[in-house]
Length: 510
Image (cartoon, rainbow, N blue to C red; front, side):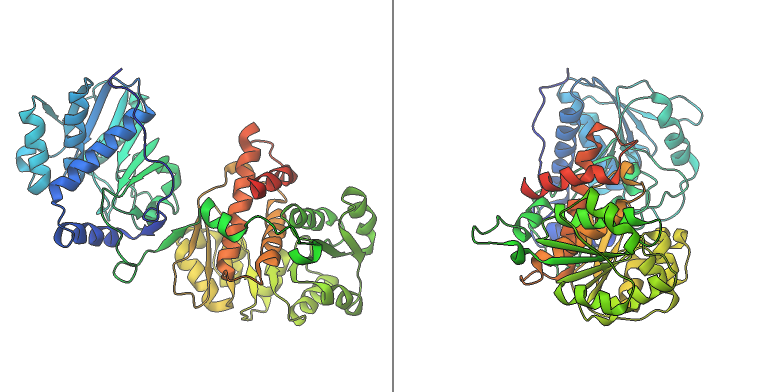
């Protein structure tokens, strides 16, 4: 044991809910040094201490530390960590890809202090094995990397997995783009990333979540910088945001107080999708839920969930009766694309009510695009690609850009599904929302139908309040992810969409 297990900063502060482009983080760093009067070396010392604290907290039994130091301030952080770990009694090996004598500025000072404290370094030699270790500290390169790794940096990154021990990345894993989240050739796959000053958007996009592992953030004592000076690129939706949007219900409330959701869907052979969306809306707190579906589906849906008001609908006139009573309409789950589907879709559009558009309704919209301000589109990457005449790969390659294109072309609010769900609204001056929850077990049939119901229900309960639509949609996405994560505690493989129902209630009330 190197030291006692220290506490680690936890929770989401006002500073750490904002996500920035790398250049924005560098500007915050400049403001801290030049305007807030915090010396650069003091910030480096704080970063090293925060990282050391986090590492020991997560890996208290790790005695042998291998610190890989590259160039620039990232290397300086590594030398501070090495000095602090040595002082705690850990066995520390430092492998340097840039000779300490060639470092400049604060990084040179950090290397000097490490050596003055009795530390030693070993220069990286091509094809030579890395020293055995209980933990590896990646302090090679920071967020400035803009081209694929090559040479010695590529070689050492390729060797790290051979050590078969946890890797902690300092600020960002080497080889991961801080802007796009794409791997630049090869990258360090970290179990833990300790990052400073501001969260970088590449940590949450594309490959970022897979390569960053758990993320610990420390603002290093820098005072918050107004968004007017450094604009964030994303906002992380938090449990605190959800609590503010969904407070305890009034004792005088009744079912009419919490909205009436109308689900339109369930074509021949697809009753399950409409049933999932309808029950999800009930489990998410809607006061009333009606389902408009094919007549042949009614008995099965009511038998499975009698609380749903289910009606077989074949004509626009029959649908109009249900539409009149609805607070919000969710159209698409199991809708199909035949004549019935198209009539139901266009009748929903003509209703003038707030809409949640999903699944086949998105495909019908892609065929004849139009723009509105009273709808919520919830595409997965494939559907988003059809809406923009792109491929799913194109969407995933630039999720933020794709979100902007969707809101610009179609208006309203867009929830772009996928790991790191994004929510944006047309004309919104604030950054898009980012949802950090969810898990691979949720990649299963019906999960999108559940999200549709959750979204409609949350919006139905909140439409009369002061919250913006994108905030309500973010709350729904967070609730859906929260329920999915609770359900996955029993295992991700084999998770069913309907497993979320009990967890939705738990997340809503706790």
